[in-house]
Amino acid sequence: MRAGNAVHRVRPGGPRSSRARVTLVATLVVGALLGAALVATAVALRAAIEGHFTETAARVARHVAVSASKGRLPDPLPADDGVLLIQVVSDPGGEVVAATAPLRGKAPISRLRSGDEDNRVDGRVCRDDDVLSGCAIIVGFEVVTETYGDVTVYAAVPEPWLLSSGLLPGALAALGSVLLALVAWGIWRTVGRTLAPVARIEAEMADITASDLARRVPVPDTGDEIERLARTINATLDRLERSVDQQRGFVADASHELRTPITGLRTRLELALDDPEDGDLLETVRYALSDTDRLHRVVEDLLALARLDSGVEPGRVPLDLAELVEGELARREPRVPVRTDLEPGVRVVGNRLQLARALVNLLTNADRHAGAKVGVTVRADRVAGEAVLEVRDDGPGIPDGDRERIFERFTRLDAARSRDAGGSGLGLPIAREIVARHGGLLYVAAGDQPGARFVLRLPLEPDPPEDR
Image (tube, rainbow, N blue to C red; front, side, top):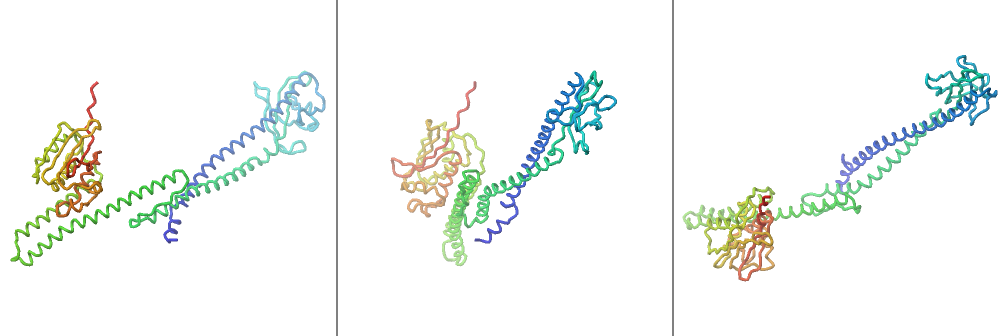
């Protein structure tokens, strides 16, 4: 095991700290919701119990009040519906005129009186004596009787110990604590299983360097976002590896292309300086100028590729492809005659400088390898909605197996693209890159005559919308 892995496991902000943060936040949220639910449960349960006993006391007190309004009550009053604490108290004297056995001879259990418009009394009484130890729910009704005059009938139901002892809140709090602990443990386990693949991905990513881009992160078989993330990372690493390999090859090839003319130029100049009297100065200058021209072409091509690789999109305007070809041909002095067949009105949308460079590269390539002539054709393929430009030469042609390879950077074919021909091996790749950025295609097509036939296809300019 590498020492670096241990560093990844304890690094602040890693998966373990994320796991703790997620667990803490989730536990706090669940705890708040659970606490609110338990409080609501306790309140509802207490209200339900108190409501039940209040209703029982009210029913008994009402029954006794009805009996008192009809005549004399028995002494002692019998228990009614399990309620043992019943008193009939005269108003306003406060004398107990009737009571159940536990309250005979006792002081009034309550002095509560009703309001002006309501003859019902609801309350709670707490005491500690031989009659009541604790608290009771009490309900009374004020009634006018012929026998006792104005009286208040009280019925009291002792509160159950579950309400009076505070056991209910404690039991719910204990239950909530246990549930919250179980939830926290479950979240910790779940988050741990979820983040474990992330930890492995992170550790592998931390070990990947520019010198070892062939490594890939493990892909968990989870079927979720983490698996898709790992696949996306690996796809990104694939593209990065290809890009770095391409860049390294490009730098190596560019270095070689620049080194050769620089070395030749330096050698000629050093020989001329070592022995100024020996040799033809004009010939030395001509060779030096040739090497300088070659350096100039290579540097221009490298700068063009750098601009294309930067991804900057230059401005585009509608162009007539035939006019573009005529303009570039007018500025050239070809080695062999150029025959044209240009259909007017074939318009595309593109950057004039870039498309002109692609055209010049194709013309230069054809001129360099043509035997006696070069042909240029512009036409519109209305069915495909494309503008077609063809550049043909009558040179040695391109073998079928090399028709794609010539578009690779710094590629030359042994016979047709030799170093003596003066090419840098970048003209055709630059042309294809420009065409591709304009949404088109550049390829070598088969021809019915000897030589090479390059076909460039670009989307035609869209027709303007019709006025309605």
